[in-house]
Length: 181
Image (cartoon, rainbow, N blue to C red):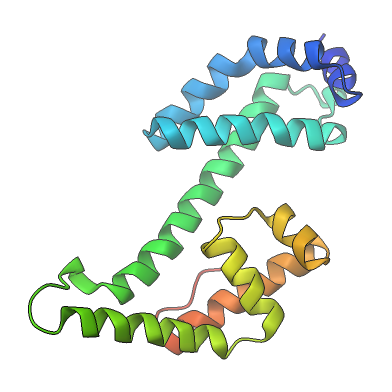
């Protein structure tokens, strides 16, 4: 039944997509909320999970004996891991920019400005496409697909650009290398 609904949804049948959503939304919601403990993040991940299913319907293979809801939760799990990786990257840069978050007292504005200037210098040292990929990802919170489309490159090329950009920034700022994922 899920496969038929999925095929119809992929073909543009909104009612079929609505039926899939209604049928599995609560399970994916609980699965995600249990792991991220934040309602707004849960909403985003559940939304993105169902969008991924629509975009990549061919990835679900019911003949392999996997329930559709299990497939949905595996997508949500991937998006949760992606969320935490991005959160860790952001935290590392923020810790460097704002160590101890105590930019108070005399000279605080100047120290903040100097840190931001160092980050800007790190970005300026990157090749243009890496810099653009980094800014789209970190400043505009664009997805890999959006970055790929904006830059006109394949998804693997986008991942490579971002990895090299993040590595370059971290190296320039004197941060530990980002683990490969």
